[in-house]
Length: 169
Image 1 (cartoon, rainbow, N blue to C red):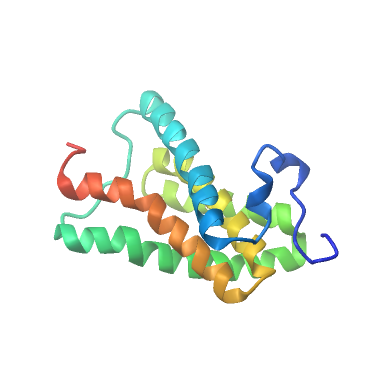
Image 2: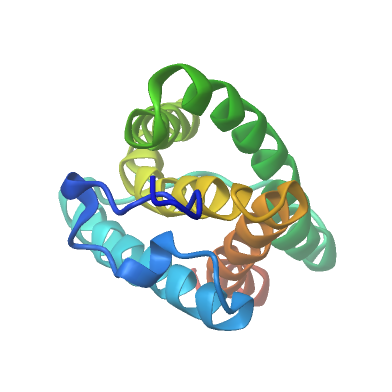
């Protein structure tokens, strides 16, 4: 920690942009965090789909508007509420880096229960969402929950649009 209470970038995460650990300029921060979550997860997804073709999750056949809502609003809100609550406890007992790693691993395992390949991809964005939560927690609890929800919704938007438009078939 610095004198301002902002978490320093842990050495194992030093390859990530320094700005990801500095709760300043929320709009700029959202763009940086979204890029850190989205582009590596695309790369992971491409790699996993080559290793395990057709092993992604099955989504329910529901109204496209409902599916879009579920993926872009509902899931990010509910998952962030769960993730943030767990992170608040974890950080208190094990510190920033272990909390982030345990959280991302836990979310990867949880998503693997629906589809193994999905969990292999999902851990990465949840690593970023967990960093976002704990970084912004130093500013406010509302920002700690709100920013990961927004970034998670943006993360899901592209794939959700592909699903609802039928481009994934």
